[in-house]
Image 1: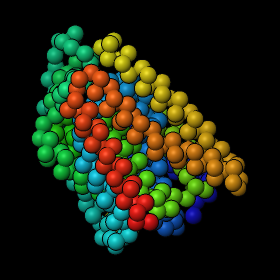
Image 2: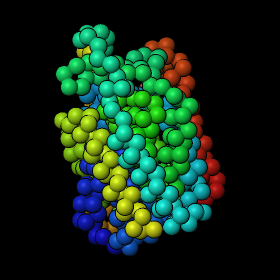
Image 3: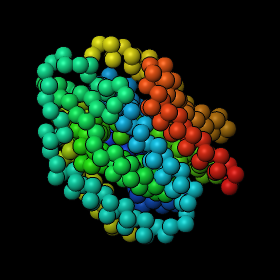
Length: 273
Length: 93
């Protein structure tokens, strides 16, 4: 099992990747912890602590960039949190091999979906000063700045998005991964939200999903405080690094990085299973 | 743009402060041995869990004040889901 210093380093690296792609670092951290000899039952809450820390750390910068759509996030999160709570309550009932294969398959599918689409189909360029940047009050639409132009978007197919967010929450509650690797492609590909907005909004929502599942784990006494400190320390630092990189990189770069990370995670999970 | 950005200033400030306090507590939890370390870690864990939920509560309050009742209700429903899950977990432990 890794010592405190190694835990800090592992959490830092995975949280940076998670914040960069809006997928949450736990989907990488949890398998690595299990590979190092930690029981999955103990690794799952640590994964969610990493996600929640990365989300907290990245929040201020993403708010300043005006790329977080809170109304969209809160709306989809009602179903994701219900899934997370259900998953956390049911965790332990599923076989580990089956769970890993399921995760690997979903991650691979998300990678394919992430590579397939193009940002331009989700947002249209509008004139400067055509309204406030960010989300529009009372709606699931908004504007954001990309490559020097202001672009407008409108979230679509809410029922489809909510269904997939429920699945993402369930995965988070059962496995300790954030489900962000499902949420960002779902918001981008199913709800037609630009990937930059989808990634920032997911970074916000994975914090809520994690908090919902962590409250269940805390009530069941499953959080190891000796490991929690190092994981939170590394994740807070990693979240800062990831968020800084995200605001400097274009949407296509994030999309390609996201797909690469998802393929890598999928391979790790298949090897583990 | 400016008005929207000003509206988020408090939230940005609060999140930055929470991040710093959480980091200090987590670092103390990493470095301190025994009861002190566990207590510091517990504080960090509590802050990490509370921060997103307080953010949602804040949004619900703001949206309610602005007359955006539909989304204020959605945010309230989200907190209700989390609260119900916690209550069930406490009853089934």
